[in-house]
Image 1: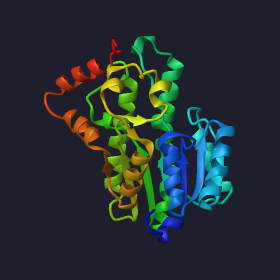
Image 2: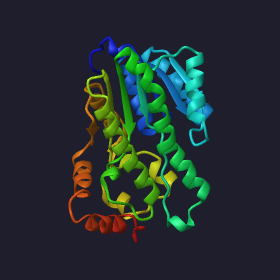
Image 3: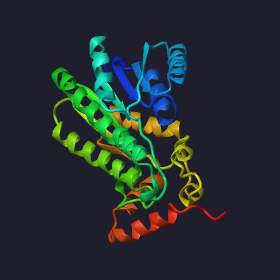
Length: 269
């Protein structure tokens, strides 16, 4: 645990906080003295997580069961916080989903829901949080992107890869806008992480998940937290993730696209 500062006692809002990286980020923030507002879809799971965090770390934890894939869910969440006079000094946009398969066969509803969660909700909450942070001359925003944001594309996960490219580009742009304001934006770009993501997305049988080592969610969360508190613009946890991210940017990018096509095919063993 790092030493606590005045800033560490602020309230943090974490989306997708009931499992995986989001839960580990909530634990890390709580361990460093932050009051928490946690958001996820599963109300029963969220209530249990809130009770456990309060018991383990002795910080106030408020929970809001919201499906951020629904139109205006992010707006409604912020309205609820405003009515409760909850001031958010740390925003962690962690909620995200993936979808594996040939694009023409994917459910249009599932594609739209992924875009809503990965892009629209993240952008909306960032926009709603910024005015207050800027008025107070302090604030931290952590947007969970992915090392795939550096890739030219992901055949069979094309929309997911595109949403994470958006998160990375958006975060970098806003971070530069905010230079000198007292507010920072950090893009956390993890590689493969031990969580339920691959199973929920349908990508668990691909060569990518068979061949590439996975980091723990707690290690990714700690790297993200430290980078956010230091005001860094981008953090890519782990050596393998850094190699894959930067390899995706090397010319000719068509090679990286073919490598991704190979990795995102289902393994034959």
